[in-house]
Length: 321
Figure (cartoon, one colour):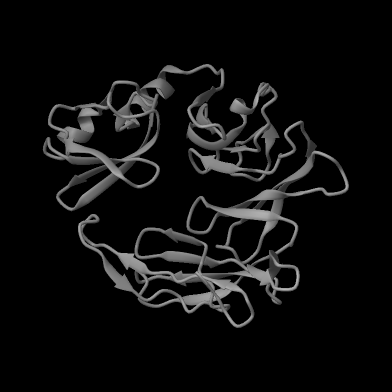
């Protein structure tokens, strides 16, 4: 990072891509950013579609006050950059209009359906924050609020911290002391009235939705993992469908994960696999010949399991208890 002539902090960004499962990487040119500022968010989809979001905020050194401050560019908007050829060429358009007080982050559900989430501090009221979620269905061109409410809590931080969806309809969000749920693709959100944290170790910072009835939460105090479940009746058909569709099970798992026999047999019996932690480090690898993977040595947390076979790749999420 460095300061430009206006004392604005700028950053260099290098784009690299791989075509062999991550064994080799080649550098390519990224977007020509409007404000010459690094895109904070970068998202890939199938068929060579890439998005980069240039945030319309910046930080600068106030030489007079001797401190760093935040500001918004004159156009008061984030910019969206899109490539349909794996980053060879890019187009751009103006995205969400920025409200300076709102501290928002991005979540990409599909190529066109995105969310921004966060909130703002209410300076006129003690221990008060807003919880905000905005949604777009046209890849960031237009947005509407789906959640905008004010909360007072003892820890003074009810901004939305993380969002996760298990499918196109069912999602969950955490606001530290409040859990929000949606079952209509994020158009409406309801609080989980059963969640009542009593200590800082129960304030959920990160959340992952496994299916519409199960989620995993990690508090701001590391070393804890919480599992959220919803009581419901399961029909025989739903039970069979869920078990047959899963590639790995159980999930969450403690010592072993088992691989769906239909998945193995349909690929000729052998897949290579790699397990990555939340930092992107490959922590375990091998083959699926035994249909069982021993994960006993892994630490509790979130993992990504990648399966490779004859140029094909399948990615599964996994929770280690």
